[in-house]
Image 1 (spheres, helix red, strand yellow):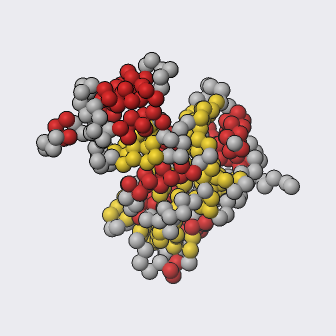
Image 2 (cartoon, each protein chain N blue to C red):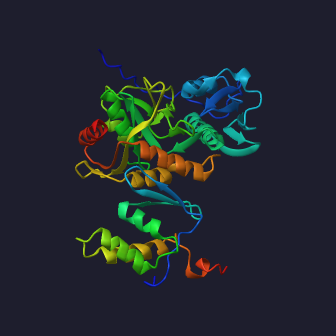
Length: 97
Length: 295
């Protein structure tokens, strides 16, 4: 995923936020559940198409200033969400079938 | 208080092929997970055994004029074997009464759980003590039945060793009093004082001498993996990981999948403790479960 792309959640993926701050994502397309920890849940929340991948990563890094790897981790997580098919592809995000 | 005496498994009565058909008995009516199931065509030799096997589910058969799941057992034309029909189709035949009854147990339970709309069904063991339930989420062979029986010996009451029914509205679990399936390896691990009875003629089936009554909310979820050569250990896991494990263990039925996922998430959300348990040495694993349940 390019740092300039704007990741956007697939609208059909269900999100269940749990009391410990973690989330369960459910992908009805392949009936798979994906557990996310607290930081991953935050990244997922950012994936509304408004922010670029780099902006999301910088937001996450700002929340963990003591962690020099936070920016890289956020980008890695965005790539993983994309690889799991949980984000709209760039074409889908533009409404191209 | 004396421990319940463990009954010896009775010898399987022989059933020679080419026997004369016995007079057919009345249908065996069952209610499994709220679903009516009827088994017709059992002869006088099979009916009491099937009734014993399904005892907690048995109902008066006159309530079953049109059950959604109907199974019929017939003797083959040459009287050499029994043939099982479901919805008019032959689905199994055997000359071995134990195999026949084991298959009927599986078929009746499968049909009922598939037809159920009231419960989300998970492939888990569940037990209760002091009003809080523990769920043991594990694949087959990971030790659910052995752990369940071990916890029963420590005063826990079983809700099921293999199937957990979660009410879709209350999210509570009530007992699913199906016989435990005990293989030879598990049997060797069970102490003589295991609180189990053995239905007649079913060497691989055991029934707890008591079940939990009422319904309970889940307080502890343990995702169990077996490692016979490892020490038992546990790690805390996220509620989301417990929920995902529950989703993976869900058994399909008439409930929409999204409802099952919601229920799994809500059950995990209500749990105070979620752990991953490496099931090595039995006593160690039981101590770790009880420790998690006390948190």
